[in-house]
Length: 184
Image (cartoon, rainbow, N blue to C red; front, side, top):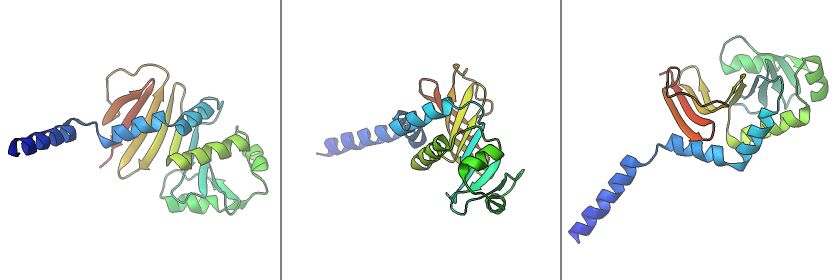
């Protein structure tokens, strides 16, 4: 009986020690999630959009430098740097009559149906930020000046095992990497 208890204890210990990190498991789950796969396809087809963010107060979103308060139907310019309160203040500056007109006037290169679908998918997946570059797309669920950034990095080309700008960089799918940058 004692040997059985020791054996079970050793198995539990081995599972804890050799199991992948929760973050990596979460990242694999995100990449395999059909909602994420749909979001990724939608984002890959965007031509000129560089950044989409959902702020902690979820009625506020940022599309290529324009802060939009969806509930109040107001908008403003993204502040250069600052706390979320600055984003909220800017997002409450100017009224708009329709998203279509706002997108047209502010030269946001996306139709509103696609924008709203992407924003809803981001909220469902608890993603805070999408950053599109030439050959990469970054999907972040944590973005903090104090604590760093964490999420999924998609790259069209294989990433060499150099981790210069990342504290964590783990492959979690074909072209997908879990990344973390710790600013503590």
